[in-house]
Length: 368
Image 1 (tube, rainbow, N blue to C red):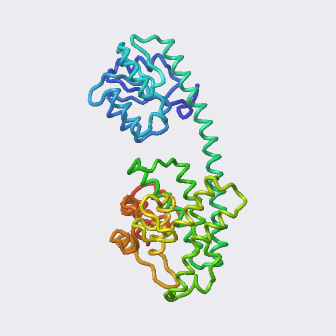
Image 2: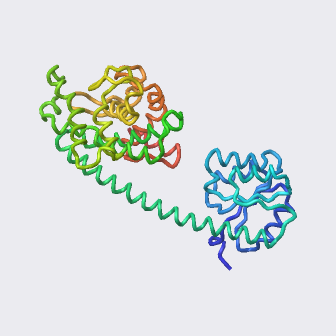
Image 3: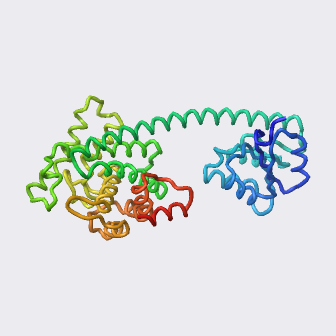
């Protein structure tokens, strides 16, 4: 017999103690069992325990019924993490169809048939165990690719940093901020239907946002005082120089990464009101990739020490952008900055964009 730790974990959600005990008797001692007497209790258990392998769910229960549980699981995409078998006395076709439409893998009607329950539970557990293994393989591959990206970005940061004193950490900060702003943006609105792959692509391309500055003289880049009008016009050309460098690379121009990098390099300094450069684009004529990197760029510039200025504290920096003192940006992105700006600054300081809990993040922030 398997040890308790080796047994797969089944959550039985039913307001009848008799049904709970009957299911455990049918399935036997090869599984761990967790019992919930209603839907609210089941949701509370799922919030705390992500090691559950299968849920057996009744429909008619007090406080929160089975359909409400399924709707909640769909809302937060838990239905893809926890397979659900409905076991119910309901026989109406419309109810069975609704259960399947909400993502259940099986619907078993009472009275119980012990053989059918055992077989379907076993088949479902085997199927999802295989899917988890495949998912883990893919996740490991993605993780490896992400780590390689970070290494290349680190190399790029060091190369550009030897030329421009501000660039080394700046490139890493922009990548972090771009990811955080875009994730918040897609949570707030459907106006920009970006996938996680899109977000990763834009964040990776953001590392090239200042590549055109390698064609600007070090005297101008690292000048500790205000630029003259002539010097400022030269500095502004880094947008076109960077875009030209991207387009001259021996890669197809329709390659997604090349396209994103081009958009960001060329239009990073456009402004939502049309007063930016080099092309004076207005509003959403500016690609969202360039818009979000622009906000990230300004926030990091404000909160970092430069040869010509001291760093502002992050609260002041956020307020300056909210007050329109640093240009005109997409109002939605300004809202996103207001909501995640503190987390962004914390991530800059620690090179870490996830925290286990609120108290860990708060304690880290106190240090800065």
